Length: 335
Image (cartoon, rainbow, N blue to C red; front, side, top):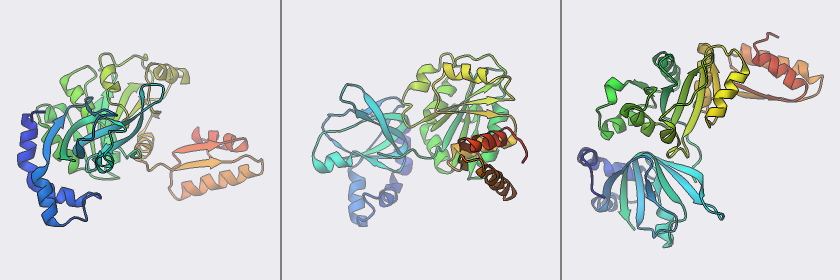
C-alpha cells in the first residue's frame, strides 16, 4: 500500500515520537530503549480510509499493528456465515499480536471505523467513552450550531473540549485532526444536513453520531447519508436527539422506526442537555426503585436526598410502587 501525502507528512512530523509511543504500550513498555529504537527502524507507517478492511479472518498473520490515529472495529465470524461486532481498538492500542505470537491465522476481521494511521511491525475491547461527536441535523430548520455550542459547553465540565466548524476543518489533513483530537478530551464536529464532503469527513472522525431533529418536525430519513451512517458502525454509537417539547410520544416512535439508533434523547432545556452529556460520557446516575407499598415512602426520601445533595437522577428503573414513584419523578412531579 503506497503512502499518501497525509501519511508522509504525519510520518515526517511524528516519527521521532515513536519510541515514546512504544514505551507507553503495555505490550512493549518493559523493553529497554535500544530494543525500542530497533523496533522504530523496522516499522512501516500507512493509512487506511474509513470503511476499509485491514485484514480478514483466516488470513495469515503478517504482523502486529499499532493504532496511532483512528479506530478499528473487531468482527468475529459466525458459524452460520457472516460476522458480529466483538469490540473496538482505539488509538494507542495494538491489534494482531496474539496470532503473531501463536503463529496462527487471523481469528477476527478488522474494519476501519475512523480513518486509520497505523504502524505495522512484521511478525475484545469494551465500549470506550466517546471522544469525538458529530452533530448531523435532519434539515436546515434545525439549529445544529446552537445545539453543538450547548453540547460543547456541557462537555467542558468533564474535560478540555473543542468545537469544530466546516470553515475550520474542511481543507485540513488527517494530521490536523489527529493533533486536534489528541490535544482535547472531547471534540464536537458540526456536519451539514446534506451529503457533502465535510459531512462525510465528520462521520469519518466520529466515535458518536448525534442525529439531531425537532420533536415537532415531520419524521424523515437523512437522505444520502444512510451508507455513511452504516459503514463501519460497529463500536460507534449512533443516537437520536429530539429537541423541543414533544407533541406526542408517537412522533418519537416514528423517528425510531426510520433509524436504527442505540438510544434516543429528548432535549427541552439545559438540564436535559447536561443529562445527555452525562449519558454519553458514562457519568450518568441511575436509580432502581423496588416494589412493595411501604417502600414507596422510602423511595421518595431517597430521591429527595439525592436532590438535596445536587445529584441529578438521569435514569430510573422500577417496578410496582417504585414504578409509580419513578414515573412521577421523571415527569417532574414534586414530592
